[in-house]
Image (cartoon, rainbow, N blue to C red; front, side):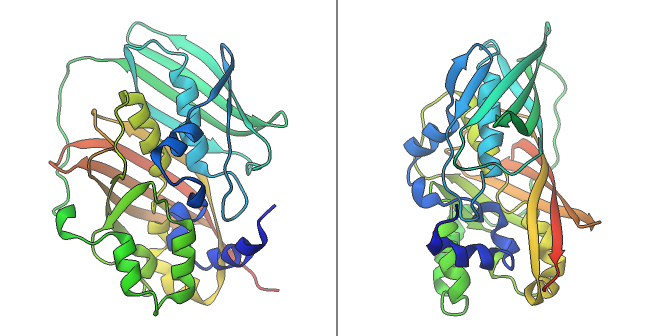
Length: 317
């Protein structure tokens, strides 16, 4: 059930693609890192089965970042401590029901000398709603190179998205209320340039945003991986809407993640500023495709992301 006071926000969401990355979550329920960690940490049922909690969303379905993070947590529980995740690839199969816990079943596909492979399927009422494959590797020396981080302003010189939004709250009154309701307050975001939610004109499909946790954590690397998986959906598919902003403003559209891939290249801390460099090379057949590269403040590339999502025009009756 969607709470009555959120129904207008759900209707507004269909015309607000730039909030896609975070509109799914009613973050009023996740006000600090302790509550978020409680969500992404699973209850163990048996050796290969785990149960995850849900939280309410603005649009009344389970948030994709939740199952990405929880499925990675489930996989991590079944590998040895000397193995670190280097990639995960997930497919969203069915919308998740907020009133039913999500059960994660881990298939221990392979335990190799250097790599460990796991398959995780998320179930509700014995129906698969999501599946994910993850690969883990022992630390190993090898060749090393990376692309250069985009030359953008440092986070110290930028406003937070809250500060930007507050300056334009009269111009975007209705959308500003949605922003306040759905914004992931446990993270801090600093857009490079104009916040994507305030862009009204068609634009090139490029977007940059700094992000980090507001409250620092002192936990092992797997938790930093989980939280990056959680937040990596932020603004990514919305970037694919930038060349179509005028048309979208005149009609309604439906957005949903179809798949999501994440590669961890190097160690990092989610406590520190990370630059999310996003671009959308293509949109077609009612699907938008976007890629992202994530860098530390000193320019080290720590992760890559790719996502395809549904971008369907809704025909007004």
